[in-house]
Image (tube, rainbow, N blue to C red; front, side, top):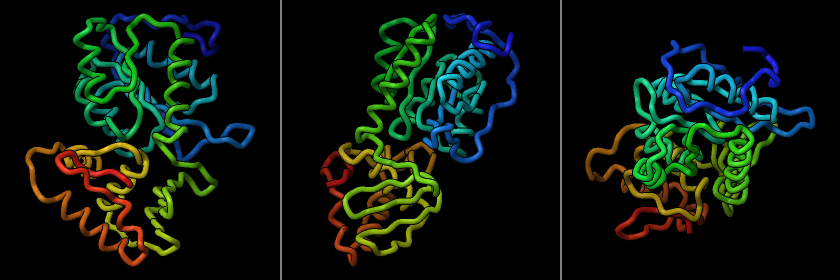
Length: 265
């Protein structure tokens, strides 16, 4: 395959292949464009090496920073180690399936599924589990680009309130400020010392301030593990967070939605 976009096919095939995994591209920190703006970071999880590379080269030419994964296990590992603005996800993957990854990524980053599975049941299932969009193979790369832009615009309009600064991403909500790269928080100007799990719980809530999160969703985001049974872990952590915020007068920002979970008020 040539290096230029002119040598690439512009329709991505729906054929499944069994190429051995290649080395995933790595992104060190936040990358900037020539105009000083930050590149959105995309994770491409696709086991077909040709398709994966084709998508990467096309999107990088459009100004996005892309990281590649060639199996579900590799994609899950990269997602746990780095921060991504959007995930492009095939369903038929070696290792962890795409369907399982949709559930794990839901609420953390928008997921666009790219799959040869064109049946209605498959679409309904992954969209219900948290995917933001579903594109059937083969598809035009221009269509993929537009769908990515739609999801990122939605994220910027309030689904994800994070702003990028030279110091990294910053999330703000009313009198709260979170610095994920530094794991620091201030409330009404006061520094708040949080455990890692407490910080991740607040990060999830502040990134999606209008959404109600169940205990299961919060647990799986903050702990990165499957939520197997009802317990008091989330209630205890929410109580501890409120206690730490009480002096700042912002503890009431966390609202309990009875029978459903928690959201920001």
